[in-house]
Image (cartoon, rainbow, N blue to C red; front, side):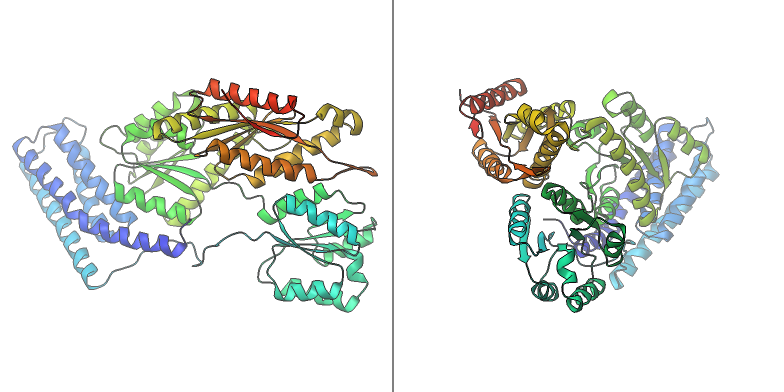
Length: 553
């Protein structure tokens, strides 16, 4: 279950307190490094490590809002900067300054911990609102004079996963609007005009609603004046009778969901767990999915499986720095274009530009305001998602294309092997599709394909992978799912699809599909799994179509 914003903010508060309590351990590391430097002041590795530790505290403490600690660490960083790389000997006077600044850093941390014990200062992000959505409503009100059309629309809407309440009288419709929760409405324009008092009441209620509820108007009229009148009273879409109910269902789906895509997936790479968690929570509060990697060498294990839309990366890490990691990622064809945003306390512009040259797309300087972090990540991730959609998705259905579907199956099976879980793979083929094209034309055939794609998207889970394998053939990868559950889901969808009525001119027709499903680990690799599902599909076709078969050895 998704966490509410209050829960995330409470985590941010606890994380901030936790960071303060572990700062003394970091200061102990600085003390130990300083002692080594006294014994070997010409050792550049020790100097560099001391600089890195101070630099880390400077950026992380600023991010958590502890400016006094950050300022003290900054002074130590600036003092050590000239000695970090150059062959300059650290003299006794400089060592004395290091000790003084180190002690001031201790004092700043002690002061902050004393304040915390008296009163916990709560840090919050810029996002507002305390109540998370508990679930998306799928109730649709349909107001339609014609009983038969109302029944037909209700059947199709239910097949597409909506709850439906139907009304043939304006008064009943108005009463439902007043007392019952709904997510959209489909309104026969002429029904409203039969009772102008009721019409005015409905329009007034729409204006007073706390949330905008999409409204689709259907009408016998196709003239400009009627369309304008519908727009003026709040229509979001307008269809002329006889209506294509599939078109209405697709439009309704886009209006209700607002074309919301899956949350952006952000890989946070930072060797400091608390700071990585802090930035991760800020992004989660903005509705993103995040995964944290504290060891930069583990990034490559997560890139393919997690499939991030963006990498948010620290610049200075002990095993390898962010610039080296970015360059390595850029040398991998599969991840060449993934956006990399550096988040670091580095303020030297030349070094920031060097990081960009090595493979970064943007450089954010710690501390970064939550709203700036969210904006920078959203802009880059959205652009990446758009580019990927052109490369990975079928233009007609919006589903994954053949190549991307096969890649997703490979990733799902590899994950199942590692975690000892199950994966079911289904092949779906529309029955007698050539006859649909020959009888009703290719544009109508495209409507059938798009209709099935929409139904599959609505009925399967967000974690399931749905692709258009080619032509009238589809594929579904169901993660953490046994073959029996996959079969039952497919059979329910098969029944729903067969009940949908497609309209061509003055004729109606229905279409069916056949499917075959197989599961890993019963079929031990991708090739065997694919072949088994394909053979099961063939058996479903051979046995009379409009059925789902489970692969058997």
